[in-house]
Image (cartoon, rainbow, N blue to C red; front, side, top):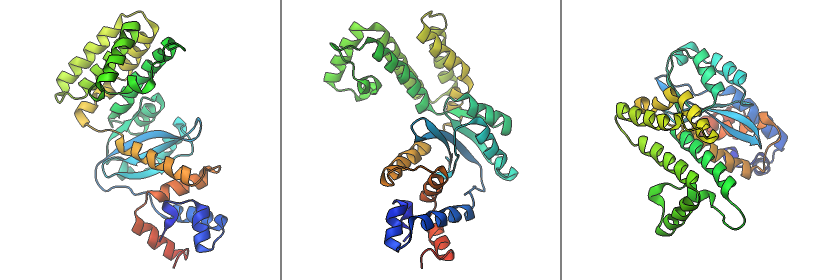
Length: 295
């Protein structure tokens, strides 16, 4: 049984009477022998990043249509992503119908350069996350020792608030009107995502942008520039209806595996471990038997 998918190299090595070093070497060899699970039909490519350690980020690439991990890149640089895209077989490139990503200009630039004509969709959860980022900046500005504003309360969806939280939020809004403004804009954006008709969604989104355009306050202008710069990619959601939810699920499992393995220092070992964890079980069993790792 290939426990290597869900346990640390050291733990599995002990179970099989191997050294951790030999198991890691075998795992890397195994991963190199297994081809990327490219689909033979149109699919949506997911691009996002996760933390290897602190601010040292790595790009995660997924097939959002069939829920497969396609790869993990050693860093989050634009050139690294471009190099990976160039290695995709031409036949597979033609099957990429949409790319879903967050609001990183480098990712958009790489797709526009290497996958000409493929539409980019900004993941809607990252858009809401951007509103929450501004809310937290305002929270930090207005919070003090005598009056603390809880982070989770501002990020909580309106319909999920209980009566006590509603009252507390009402008091926050009374004291700090700018927080109320941004919170209401976040809820407007969430409501826009509920609209089924792309034309109506576009009208509501443009109305939100217009309301920000001539507001002289720096934070409001920063939000305006971001939404305007990413307008096409945000509105593409209403045509293609794709999100990076599966990729976020991959990141959740990666975090669990990192805790089980007590962290990693070597990126090559890390990539081998994480990609093996998402391969179909039968593929790993056959490959382990063929390489005499298990019998």
